[in-house]
Length: 105
Image (cartoon, rainbow, N blue to C red; front, side):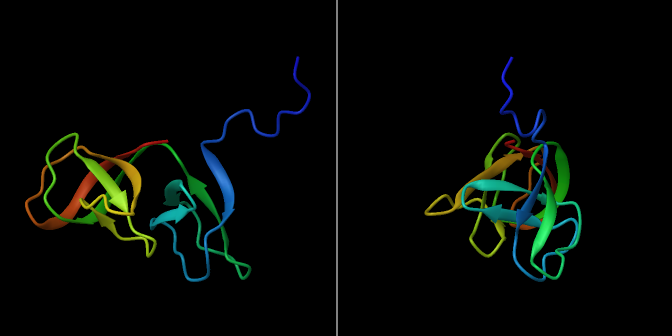
């Protein structure tokens, strides 16, 4: 049996997300994405949930199952460009709004 396992389940990670991040906000650290479960502490670290479904604000047109991307600033968009895949829309929206988003995990 492997003795070097650090986390059996990596659904929640303690990551450096930057100062000012609040619980419930989408975050991206490199290519790791998720939603902050806690406010960032004084050192900029927070617990980040990597799996699940969250109601989040998005900008752009989405159909059910469409990819949702996150910008380096933490905004969720329909635009791929140099953004990171965040998850998938579980609801449709035509311009922007709050929808359920399945995290890519």
